[in-house]
Length: 293
Image: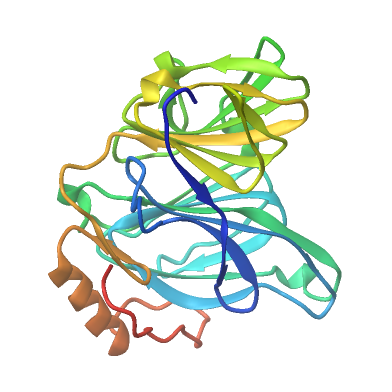
């Protein structure tokens, strides 16, 4: 990354009954392209009496992307979707004007030891689509474009790059790419990227000039077209980015919008429990107190 403008360290955040590493938003960088939120879940060892249980909670104005390395999560939402996500697959949920969902350990795993490890990502919607109808898409691991070049493995998890297109139905120009290498290699892919770009180091390290960067860091470029770095052996990194929006997007809790009035309406609707319900679920996460960021 010959044009690194910002280095973000992973920070602990409590999302209920376990901790995650929060990567975005950051006080000096609220978004990278349309990406406004990234959590690194785990790796966490859960014993036979520990389970992931995130009760129904709402979203507006964004798409969520769940990508697991290890684990299994049962997704249920107010559209009636009930689907288990497994490692390598993609859950892409577009909230639009409003959706509610829960995330839990599947029933068959609730009494055994298990791992939880993955990424949860929010992608803001363009202003003109913030109030679109909600929808949900699941893409199996085998359907994600994957290829190898000069001994380096690539996956285009979402968006378009390298002349390829992921089947994940995104709503603005973006990319989310996995890069794995068993050997030290020079990577020069700036010509295939656009807009703003960030790189998250999951394992291993990368080198830029005389500097070495280790896991749990995000590097933000000043210009995606200059993306060049050396990846060390046995490393995995994730590139994400795209065209930023012309207008600012605000975040309050799980609500994202370019219009603060839409966020205030969502707060009122959730407090009064007028959002659509998740079939079979009676719990819910209460509205927190913090102000709009």
